[in-house]
Length: 174
Ligand code: HEM
Ligand SMILES: *[C@@H]1O[C@H](CO)[C@@H](O)[C@H](O)[C@H]1NC(C)=O
Image (cartoon, rainbow, N blue to C red; front, side):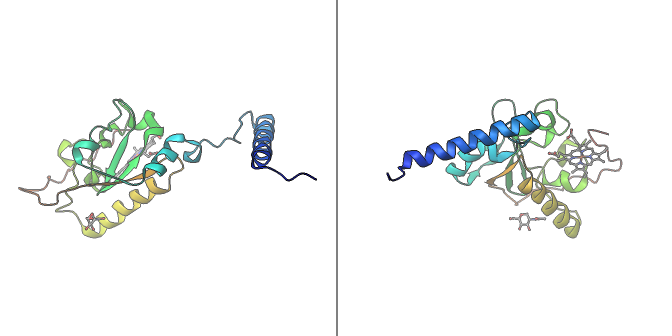
């Protein structure tokens, strides 16, 4: 009996994948059993090859969805949210959050005040910051379509007063 060659193994795996896709298409009208998350996104694997990135705020601002990938940052952690252009792209309900580190908005919810779109957390309750910031970071980390890109270099040496608290919180989608 002949030995299996590497090519035979590839053929068998390829055949099984093809059969799986056919089976899935037969039952669900979709070749991937309805899964369309990041593990089927070539950009995700490109990022894995690339490794974690370190961006400046200037570089981050390029990823605002006007062309190519869409990134947002929360207190230094950068996430790729390109898969959800409807929400984060131009005209989307949360488009203002992208291309920058708007950590403060995730805590205050003051979406209508432009000066809230900063990583300046001075004047806010530290416990609330900890809870909201880590909560949202975890949301983007674990999301089926989004992934962690790396860090944005931030300067915490703020001059002047932090943004005023907003009295009437208004949400973009309310
Ligand atoms: C501090 C307060 C809030 C923050 C930081 C916040 C932030 C966000 C973010 C980041 C998303 C996008 C999630 C994703 O990528 O799937 C989202 C989605 C959404 N938010 Fe909020 N939100 C807040 C409050 C609210 C309130 C009060 C409402 C209701 C009026 C609301 C309505 C929605 C809706 C409807 C979506 C789904 C958008 C979609 O998938 O089309 N949000 N929110
Ligand atoms: C924000 O990031 C800074 C610098 O890494 C860190 O010291 C601080 O604890 C973070 N704050 C929150 C609320 O996560």
